Length: 71
Image (cartoon, rainbow, N blue to C red; front, side, top):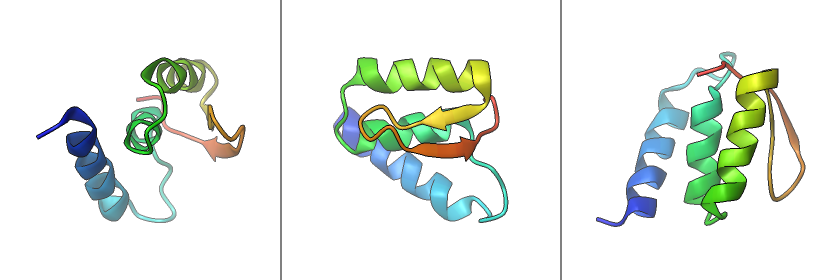
């Protein structure tokens, strides 16, 4: 099983298991980023910024996904 497939599965399960009203974690967003084929360095940079600020900004789109749990 390739790394990206594994991360996609983990991210999918995380999204399904997460209640819509509950914030996702920075790590959840990073895994989604990786599953979409973005470069690991870009996803890691967005994750680091999320861990500092608590807000996840998509590295490829620049979309502000809002508050995230610093995990």
